Image (cartoon, rainbow, N blue to C red; front, side):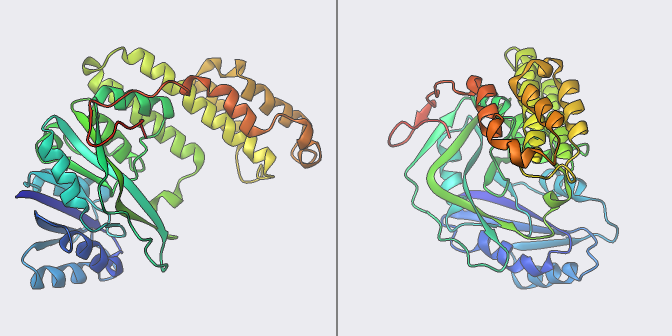
Length: 356
């Protein structure tokens, strides 16, 4: 039986803990699960909730900090200092996994020792609403060479993973190390890339592996688009710095990424004009960031259509919008290089499947 160590960091999320912990302990099939709740000095009494849960279930442990050390340090405390199962999971206290998720992911990792982590689809739901009904019957899985998966992520400028749907091989997690304190917003993106640089990646097809809760206090709500783009760039570039010797042509990956991130910055600025949001979005900052990220950005059609919008002005744009290249068309003009043929995985149980 495979063992799974689940780390649940918590700060002011005590009211979510019962659901998060219950989701990994109940209906998870043939896996041996242990849970560590780490409360980071929450002022709302979350620590007491964690200790009470640990007292009534031997599978649950709780650590309550007397001083807040931040979420990145809390992640690393659990994953590097406590997790000792075959596999490990970092689960936010406001998220949940679906029934059978741990067993499904563990079966994939058991069957493929070269896979460093496995993930599947995630269901988003709003706090207070009923959980969507998950798909829990696995149809197939796909195994991707780590560098194939990683290059696709560079082309999209996103990891394509939310976080609660991932199960990691603990030995690889310890080898790679902890989360980067420079990336409070996108440390998880960097982590998946670091893992993929050293191992293959598994994807569970046709099933939903986790629930991601949307609520006003999500940490992501505090980040502007520009802040997120800056973190994106740092997350990906830092992987090239750390793992460059493991990758084929890191300079090419950097160029691909920088063009993509620059285009996203310019597209955000174009949409601000089209949606009448220029008072909320700093267009000049986004343009400066795009050019700094990728100097050739000035030659892009989307840059020229943005300049046209600036000339027309925010007040006149709603009236002249039908005469101006729409944002979606500008984006398509820049995205031809993403239309590469899908690459088959190393192995797919059941039928072959295109890359997600």
